[in-house]
Amino acid sequence: MSDNLLELRGISKAFDGKTILQELDLNIKSNEFVTLLGPSGCGKTTTLRIVGGFEKPDTGSVIFNGEDITALAPEKRHINTVFQKYALFPHMNVEENIAFGLKIKKKSKEYIKDKIKYALKLVDLDGFEKRKPNSLSGGQQQRIAIARAIVNEPEILLLDEPLGALDLKLRQDMQSELIRLKNELGITFIYVTHDQEEALTMSDKIVVMHRGLVQQIGTPKDIYDEPCNAFVADFIGDSNLLKGKMLDDRLVEFLGERVICVDEGFGKNEPVDIVIRPEDVEINEVGKGIVNGVVKNILYKGANYEMTVEAGGFDWLIHNTVAYPVGSMVSLYVKPFNIQIMKQMDESEMILDEDMENETYE
Amino acid sequence: MKRMSRKHLATPYVFWIICFTILPLIYIAWYAVSDGDGGYTVENILAIFEPVHWKAFVLSIELALICTVVCLLLAYPVVLILRRLKIKKKGTIVAVLILPMWMNFILRVYAWQVLLSDNGIINSFLGMLGLPSINIINTPAAIVFGMVYDFLPFMILPIYNSLMEIPNDIIEAAKDLGADGFTIFRKIIWKLTLPGVISGITMVFVPAMTSFVFSDILGGGKIQLIGNVIEQEFTTSMNWQLGSGLSIALMTIILLIMALLQKSNQQTKGNNMIW
Image (cartoon, rainbow over all chains, first blue to last red; front, side):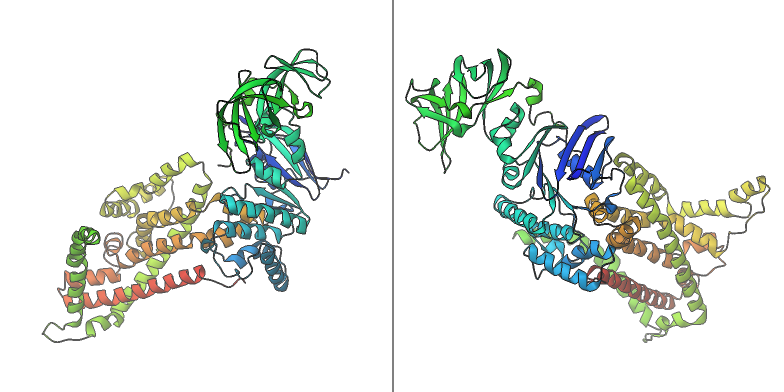
């Protein structure tokens, strides 16, 4: 037996003839915080629902603790879900909501009472036992939903965009709250979001999905620093995406310039995608960089300035702490190891949100 | 000023209610306590306890109860099935279910007379098959048949509305927490549809309790319900004082039953006990 807690093997799923997932393979280890990240329609929610048992895959199998649970009903899985819209039982108070799963498992009254107390303390809502869900704020309801799930001591907790309905400040608070919870509970979290910042902040492992296919699996740092294709680069963070040609090992041509880089192993004259992060573009005096250009636009963003520089027929997005006035001539330079070179992706696969089919969940 | 002008909009309705609900009620109440010779009495109201009236009253309650229970047992499964259907078909099916409501109420009752009578369609059909005929017309059973047929939509609609309001993720959350189908029904679906059930019961029980048309047409005039008694006091006997007294008594009892029903509903809603 492998040390994977959960394995998805060759999962495919289609709704009304539309393919949502194609041959998805995914391994999740115990005690990992895994985020499924992608634009809407990428199949991330469907993947979560297959793990939860709410959808049956057309092909493939779900292996949990070495056991095939593909056909197992959701109520029989040691997996609990925190739903996007909280899904608290409106006719029950907080205490009854949390006790729901435990009562079904025929736990003793004392056990349930202790668990409720513990769970409410954990989500920082002690004293809310008798409140009704509709008297709670969105953030409080979300925390009750988490409490209701975790008292059942699931081995995996599934979270379907749990912070999607909260405002920014609350969302950031809940992010650190969730990380703390995961560490205290020591259980595996599978988290679905379309918010790349959230994914980068919280995850041990990010699974970037697009059109039912896994694009890249890796740590937040891997995904940000070494995106494997233009889609991932574009989806995660801001980036400058350029087309280029690999002339030789460690030598790439883009915008008509030959530039030294660190990548090897591409074919001679192979067309490639190049990604350069805005904070990696350095601004020098004219002539002292790779390409010369004109500052077209500048925005003050608090921590830095966001500039648009037209250089070599391309609008560069640049983050810099020094402001250069609009119209000034500059030269741009990128350190070789900050030039990320990727195999070229089919143009049609790059389209992000335009022709996405809606997530089946909605 | 704005509030004033908005209040004016309600004037026609206030006028309507005063003229056609409140004034007649006051009139009925006044008749109920007057003895016809200028004096006052409570005899007309207490007349409900006279054996002949009481018998009609008890039978009315019995038939209305049977009718309500049958309607509930028929309506609830239908609505549960409707929820499981694909979205597009639901509206059509509900429309078909309430289609009879588009026809005149009295006509529908007469239709049942034709269907159920000794030489009626059902018995002719049974005869064709060589089966013994059934003598159902002019019995309480025929009255219940007619009532159930007429009042079923009033049970279906409120339950349908309350069931459709339950979001799917609440059901999934219950499954997720380990609940099987029966537990989900008992602890979630039934509880959340209870307001619909209660308003369905109200909308079936009250008219079934007070109607006199069913017993007139399907009971052959032989079976006296409290509605018939009151009707006859007003029409045949021309004893408006007694008719009004019985009406007030009936109204009081129905209001009491409804108050109890509402209270039990609120208790389940405001229930703070876990166990």
